[in-house]
Image 1: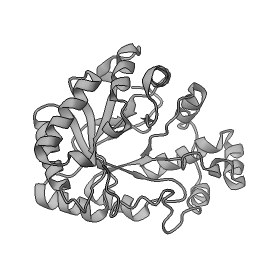
Image 2 (image 1 turned 60 degrees about the horizontal axis):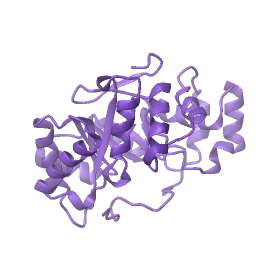
Image 3 (image 1 turned 120 degrees about the vertical axis):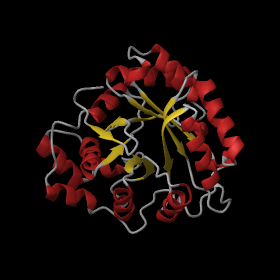
Image 4 (image 1 turned 180 degrees about the horizontal axis):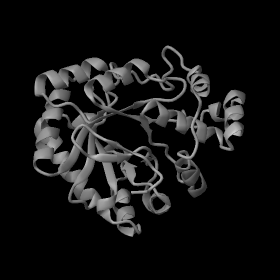
Length: 280
């Protein structure tokens, strides 16, 4: 593990780094090269999904990188169309075959799809997959309070991680509080707002200049000080390196408040409410 990156211990004992690499849209040979560069630069947590259609590229990058498999934490996610129990198990097996892996370190249910109401069944399949050794740690993504409550009440097993949309426009205060209550670690997708110009906002730039950092580094540091694991996506090696270089400075409480002041009541950038979204 990169010595400069702190770790979290999940509720099942798995240790994960405080930042990871998002791989959405990193595909094919260019995607493999970008992921190899990221791993060689120091990333150890690599986040994928069946829906990203790049698990094969992730597997290829693992084999080409200079880092042993056991030092990496590889994550994928179960799509909405595969929630029925047997389909979920077969999908996890296929994920392993595509990436040519013996196990995933993390596997998440990508969306709850509450109208279909099969997410508890999918969770039961995840529990079984963990027992079979397919997965070291099981979690969820985009689950609201009520979905988490139900999983735990009906199975007795809390997710280790919930990966949610989290950025300065949507700081997920209540959701993070619920995670803390249940011992669930928060992971942030779209931590920089996906290309949003917030990294160049004058308030953010002022903070960045005070620390000799970039606006993106300030926002990623804000995530880590909230106790969330950001997983920024970048195919550019300079950006990948910059995104890792956030553990040698600390934002003051006042600076944290400034970043959080961008929060809006419903600051979801794409209107993807997990209570309504039905992922295919």
